[in-house]
Length: 234
Image (cartoon, rainbow, N blue to C red; front, side, top):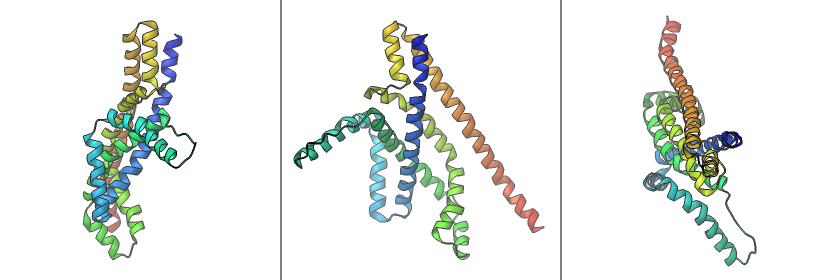
């Protein structure tokens, strides 16, 4: 039973990894979508190269490159500068950065498509009323983008949760890492990997139900808005 609870306790590390990576991915996704739509030729080209890179290279390869390559390059620069300082990246930091980078590329396209789906007439009307860019983005673009992007965002989150298992390769003591150690110690791989699968399934199922509720809520509010306006007009 000790191994059983030890594996379950590591679920908090997996959730921490998933949540932190998601926040980084949202920030990168919004930045990438802005660069592609409003950033000019050079920023759009950089954003395009970024999304092509993260979608074209396997997640594990990028993770290993970041974990081993970035410290080596930084250490080389420090050595050339004459510094005696050392530099290293923790498995948690490498996992957060890599997963955030990877799924930020996917969210870039999700957010970009959602923004393009917003009727241009709404933005033109807001400009005609004299609203500034920030107010238009905050009051009109972002709320509708969030609703339109929710289905794609849901898929990205579910895949991200499952991809956190890759970070165990770097030595992070998440649920996958502890399940593997428990399986080796007890020679009961089926039991502990089945437990791990059940935990991942629980996380994704609860997430799916919550996000689907948000989708239905958003669709209900959208359908209700025209009738409210019609009632006020009457």
